[in-house]
Image (cartoon, rainbow over all chains, first blue to last red; front, side):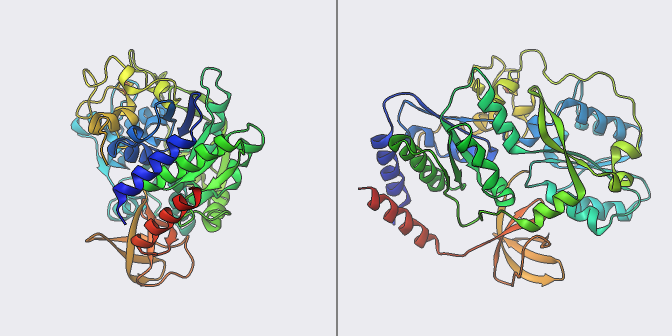
Length: 355
Length: 73
Ligand code: SF4
């Protein structure tokens, strides 16, 4: 069976079923945006169907204050380990990569497990900066429960996707028909947290996988719902998402973290949208273990519209700095840094209309 | 960073598995997935497996899409 042919058939069916009015879906996942942009999927959708990205980039929504704290800790002489993307994110006035050039001990790791291995080998105190959504948080919960070396602590910045989706629903100037929900976050949280978008807000919600055809399949289900006026929650990624999610991972999250109101970079505070370590884990909480004084932080740098891109109000192309002053080699705003940031993705892949 | 990557389990040692990602081998924790065996495919997120993936053939999946599209005709 030919993938291109299937994609064309999906495209045709989506066009057949899509009503004539403007229809808009929002997805909240950098990996979705990558597939959509890279394979030019928007060119397969009808002109009146708008598929936008929301705040699905953990690197982008980590507040400058968290980066500032990590920089201070590193400059103070601690070893700071984190994911490669985090090095180039601009904090209020500089990045971890600047601190590294100045001689601070900043190490790139691909997982928290690797950070622990490094901690075991050194005498210095090591802080792991762990950011991410529901998919990344369980790994941090797991290592803390298993036990970590005494010179290890963690600076977490975990954010939860459903509360951010709810924020979008309630934004007055963002109008849309529903969500293409993120497959891997759903692998952890399951289907339940999305129910309210259907029952309270009347929003079509379809959980989608990450292959181009998975996404077209989800969009077709979405459009079919609108056409038939049957608004519901559908799982179009059954091979990885169980209705109940990953119970073990969810339980580990509940044991180690508590849900708190949390700041999203440039967007503001969202109720019950973040995870903080419970008191039992204070000893390993870098915020409590290592005191630093932070100046007032600055999330939005003049001219950057990342916060509007993240809330589906603007696209990267509408930013005057896009491709000019802001490039992946020299990112001015947080959305240009990582491969999950919409500005970075649009820069890398443009709008290639092929599959 | 926030990217899920599928890989095949080559070897299991307690709560850790050696996983093959298209030629690159890495250790992955398997605390969150039940009863995995060598040969199973898992979805890795920053060093932890978060789900076991059924290994239906890629071709089978395309057939399912085909059937779905047919059913709408
Ligand atoms: S292109 Fe750069 S400056 Fe403009 S919104 Fe994106 S990250 Fe911000």
